[in-house]
Image (cartoon, rainbow, N blue to C red):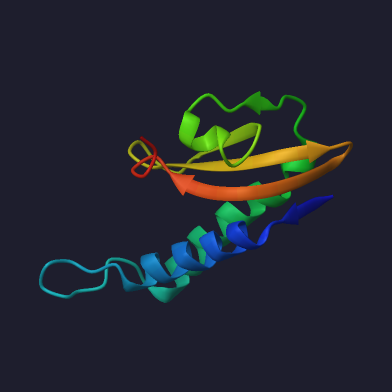
Length: 105
């Protein structure tokens, strides 16, 4: 079973809103509403499948370690990866934080 901590839920909401409001310099939307929903759901589906993975990768970046013991990298495209930071207790996965590679130092 996968559980989302409050911060991770807020991260998902922030990701959705940022993608929805992403604009070019001349104020044109980058993504359609349907594309944003698909993108958001792809991240959500990845999170919800973490209780079925056979290998749990340890977090290595100090910024990630402060949120959780394990990390799953969801590579969206050649430039963008999302890091899903989580802890485990038995068969349960507790997602603590979701951050992209642009914000990982």
